[in-house]
Length: 142
Image (tube, rainbow, N blue to C red; front, side, top):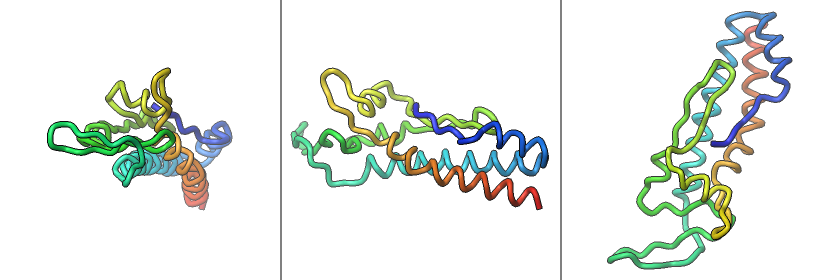
């Protein structure tokens, strides 16, 4: 699980309190849209190819793994399909994977180097979240 935080959260909360429900709903929608975008981006990063790691054969199927630093290479599709998001409050959402090995791939272990997909997706989404929140508050303030 990777956390994407709203910059200036106290300021956002103060604006919501000042403006009211419309601002709160707009920010909630911005958080949800961004969480869904992160999930979509993670899946694309995993499924996008080709990867340049080690190639091996399992049964009659050949698979090229990701190299360190690349997003994991999809094999069975289990990792990509394990992604989820829940809106844990109006101003927060959780995005993650139901698989324990997702964090091993993301951050690495003593035996494997990281193959990040979540971190770059969240980093790409952060400025969009800020812009969506600013837009939602401006619209509600009118």
